[in-house]
Image 1 (cartoon, rainbow, N blue to C red):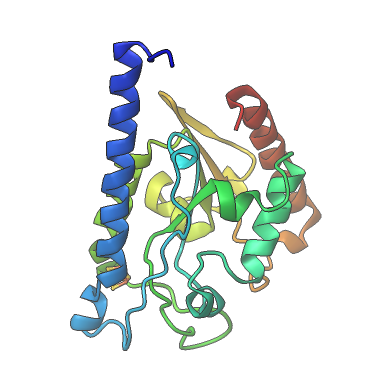
Image 2 (cartoon, rainbow, N blue to C red):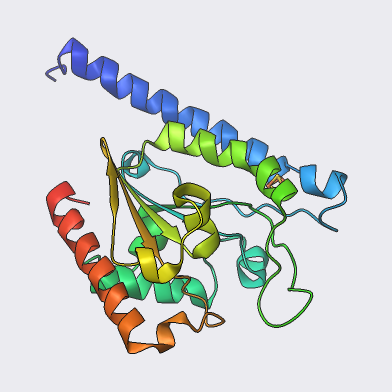
Amino acid sequence: MQQAPRGEREQQQARLLRLEELRRLQTALRACRRCQDRGYLTQALPVVNPVLHEGLLEGLMVIGQAPGLRSQQRGIPFGGPGGRVLQAWLERAGFPPGYLHQHVYLSSLTRCYPGPAPRGQGDRRPSPQELALCRPFLEAELRLLRPRVILLVGGMAIEAFWGKVRLEEVIGTARIEGKRRWLPLPHPSGVSRWLNTPQHREQLQRALALLADWRRELEL
Ligand code: SF4
C-alpha cells in the first residue's frame, strides 16, 4: 500500500490528537458537578454531544442556551421538540434527514438542565455564575473542533458571542471572521413566539438561504 506524504501524515496525526483531547474533555464534562457543588443546581446531569468522529472537526457546530428536560432525560443535546425544528431548518438549507444528530457538534452555554423558569413558561435561564463555570468547556470545544460554521441558537447564545442585540437586528445576517462563520438563529423551541410574525419568518428564511450557500461552498 502506498503511504501518504509526510506532511499529510502529520496533519492527520494532529487531527486525531485533537479528537482524542475532545474525548477527554467530554469525559470531564460528564463528571462535572460544579454548579451542584456551589448550590446553583439541585442535580447536575451534563448532556454531552453523543457522537464523536473526525467528520465533526472543522464542520458545523450549534451553540444553544442549555439542555431542556427532554434532552436531559434522553441524554442527547437538542433531544426534544426544539431539535426536531432545528433539523427541519437544516433540511430547508439542503442538509439531509438525520444530519443534526450525526454530523453536527451540539453544544450550549451550560450543559445541565437548569429546571423550569420560576415564572411563566419554559426553562430557567442559567445565571451568570453558571455561564462562567461552564464557559471553559465551550471554549475548549471551539479550540479543538475549529468549526467553520457556528449556529448561535436563541437570544442568550447570540448575546454571549455577538453582544446584546435584538433578534430583529441580527437574524438573516452573518459574521465572518477568518475561516469561521457565525449565523444567529432564533430559538427553535415552541415557547418562543418570535416566529409568529411573518416578517420574522422572512428573516429566518434569509438566514437559512445563507446557510444553504455556505453548505454548497464549504461542502458541509
Ligand atoms: S452546567 Fe456546566 S459547569 Fe455547571 S455542572 Fe453542568 S457541566 Fe458543570
